[in-house]
Length: 91
Image (tube, rainbow, N blue to C red; front, top):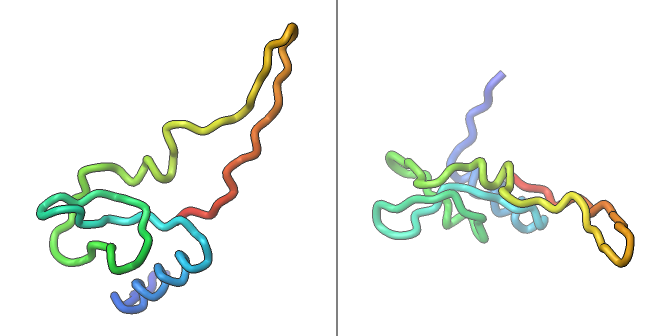
């Protein structure tokens, strides 16, 4: 089942997510003819009009390049501790 959402409702939804502290990433026009997926601080930065082809991939927000899974110390033996996962919601 699919649902159609108006542009105004989408912008309101993005602002509501940001107000709740959810990290929202979307295409943003950084300079003329240069669109990139970036973390949004407000829905007004969201590029929705015309043909949009961001220069980067949304994958960098879904699958970060670096994510700590544990920490360790070596003095004189090896001691490993798991890291707490990033629990901040991302959309």
